[in-house]
Length: 288
Image (cartoon, rainbow, N blue to C red; front, side):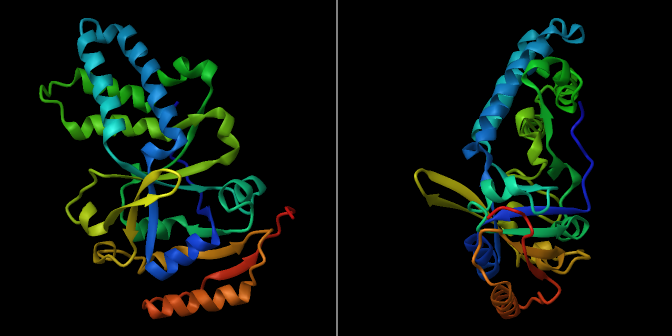
């Protein structure tokens, strides 16, 4: 069971109309802290069978203490290290996506050209993956064949006495690429931005900032600055907006597409962008 690397040419982000307007007006794309997601508990639970399998591995005989230390470090990393996530899907104009993620089908679906989006963001391929869905009954047999297991085993067998903290976080992040098979109909594609992310030309402080929002609970979001000069460096895609193909208005929305087109064009123009290529259309989904 390897992490899926098959990505479609187009991906979709379902959200509210208010969220779209906020993205346009503030030039910010919000990513949620994984620790406030339901999937976070699933990721924590995945560490238990991982620990069991590692302790049963003959290649790791005599290293049981190391195994337990590693899984504890992985749990600590998952609970204490912010990893920011945005969810997309391969499903276009899908009824379940509309109802679950676009304010009961009154919101919008943003269609992206995946190649252009990756070019603009300049992030490595490990940060965008299609979710792998696993069954609770087969979790041990599937997990032992996974990239996550191989990475954890390699980490334990490594000679690095200090144990590179980035490596343990890499192993930990694998847990967030898996979900219960009961959600497989969502065909989720997940973009993940670890708070420890840094390369020679990109770092978190330059990409945006964390903001706390008080709803029924206090939640943390990373506001990705779409106008950050860091995102334009060596990019073949001039802006985030160049990667958007179309915006579909939900089947239960009362929004007039032409008025929305005028709003988007004006706001983007005021921010120095051209959104004339973005098609605004109505959903053909049968939800009413």
